[in-house]
Length: 365
Image: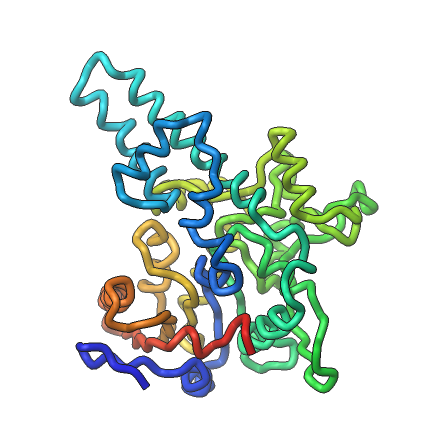
């Protein structure tokens, strides 16, 4: 068992699960660390930055260098803020502000195309044992036979969670894992044989337990409906479908805005995203529930989500810590978690416990 210099205890994931048995439901919030743990060579921001093609917007690459970052959202945020304040200081440079705003928008598109371009082509590119391991992890939260069955909320754009939910392969015959995986998508009533399914609306969403809070690579807004691309109906790999759609100037539903406020505004203007936001908020208000956060740095650009947890009524939050608890990033995460707990009304105090993310063995059992 590890301890930080401030004597904050880091427990194992198994101990966190045992401790959470006193609550009626467990919910899980996933950040990019979930995907990095599977394929760090692809899903880490540094990897995406290295694979991105900045040839059309070379100035934008210099923004990353000036900020000493490879985080797309940080660069987008800086450009959008800069576009607002530049005209204040230089009256003849309004065009410069417009260019910064245009480059911020271009970076959002570049992030989408880079993820699609770098993404594993199919589930076959992921070892079968990894999927089984991940399903074992998810079983604690959405197991069909588990009395703790709750919700999974993800902030990730990639297909790893979706692939895991669809992959029922099992290397051990005696260990069948059945997961609830209702994402509220179903047949288009006008085109039931279409090679995609559509979001069934708020009513159907009440029974859903999987939510992509920031959209995903396989969710496309057609204008009149939200479509989910599927492999089983078209026979075409999801990544290939996404790449083809992007090449036709159709973009998946993504929330890649720079600030928390901008993200929240986009979420509120999309029925599917807003429904997921409301479901998370409602469960955060349920005293008998608990939440786990895995693979998220608790960065302020996701405060539109985090403050809903902070202002809820549930009593226990388990936050994953990866690596040395005394590292700068982990100290920041722990301090941030305490700040969120401090926001809670005294009538409903929030107890935060940190667990060692590596002991969850999400992709490696």
